[in-house]
Length: 356
Ligand code: ASP
Image (cartoon, rainbow, N blue to C red; front, side):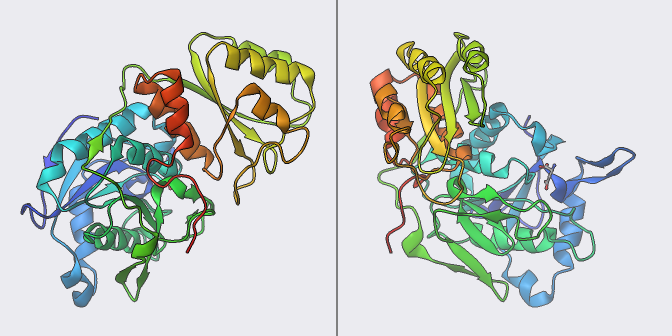
């Protein structure tokens, strides 16, 4: 992703920077189906100017940065998230907030990675996309764009939010839930941060992340992506196959999607493979395959093996957040102990139950 700026509506300091990275929201039909498209600016202008006058008048001033190579987010990599975070960091002082337009397929991954890279935010970063391209009659793109701009103009929002279907979620808590429905996403373990009510943003500030200290941007190193594997348990899985995967020296971490509250098969071979990987210095973390609720390894005798091996509990984190956090921490070159300590902490509100 290289830098290329076009401005529209306003380039005043204090405006919102819209970053167009790709996704259905900006796609156009091609002979092979929907495909990423450039020249998003005029389409954005035309769509927003068709809003009813009262809603148009409430929009904050914005500038647009368009990627010269917008992507279908199914192709996104940590390098793309690093470039996005770098762009926000570079422009941080020039804008009151940021909106990232991105595909929905990996939007929760992008939001999670941005949250870990842009710690200590003092202004909003709101990611959004759409199930239908901008300009399609009855589609969700215009409403999502309007909502994202409205939330990005709320100075009390000081974290990475994911706005979709009129609902604002903590980015590192959200998951794509629906393939077609305009609701798009859910935040199973953290309540909504805000909602659009009659096209006006309402923030539930008590649920927002309160960061300590000044912005601490820790960008991912795109040239050295940490090799983190994601492995979901399935009945009948063969330990010898998993062993070949984990044996690679490049592999630095594993996110294991366990059963229910943190359970795994009573399979000595599999437990031995995991223990071997941990002994070799790889960081193993466990999440649940259930989207709602956290894990407590050791509730069942079978799950006790996770504690014995030293697998870290990801509590109620989404698998997207767990993978991004592990990738992020490994890329920071921390000591083994410091990395384990930070994984178990809530860095940006990514783990831990909500207590009203
Ligand atoms: N494949 C698209 C993407 O993630 C889906 C979408 O944006 O809704 O870029």
